[in-house]
Length: 198
Image (cartoon, rainbow, N blue to C red; front, side, top):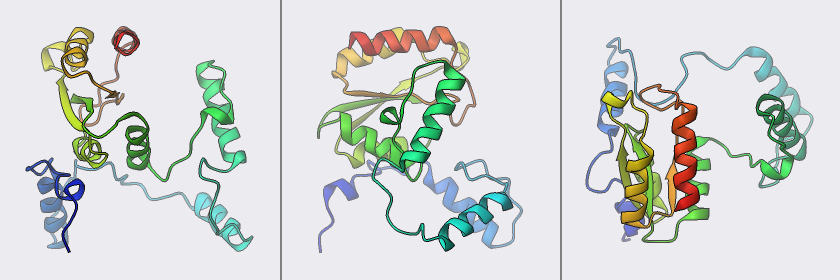
């Protein structure tokens, strides 16, 4: 069997940083104490009341497939919470539930990128971003957020890359992983203007 170029090209000829993660896990298995600063795995386990509610729901028969965008009750709850916190009118039609962040990023890129399109993302970045973009047959293009700018991505740099590459998408992650930087209102307004312009 021959694997598809979509799968064999996920890493783009490199490791996208996964070697560090795999080495850390190997060290942990060998008994070495490691403070792992790789993937976003919480060091706090799921709270007992959540597990109990999940158990009760499963016993009540909620074990089958849910609607693809998520159950209406959950989407309503998320919409209400978002609207209360942001003041932005939000309904269940604005909410899509996914099994996790990676699934959401993959779905977003599938919805916005055609094969061969360029997808921008901010560097420093979480290790999966280039592979996620390659996974939808798009071309990843990093935009440097520099230490001297407090890792706030500059709108002019993003605009230049968007124009140069005719980018189809821009992945924005704030608080940024791995720097932890929260993008300022000025930064986000600049990014929003670039997106409107391009």
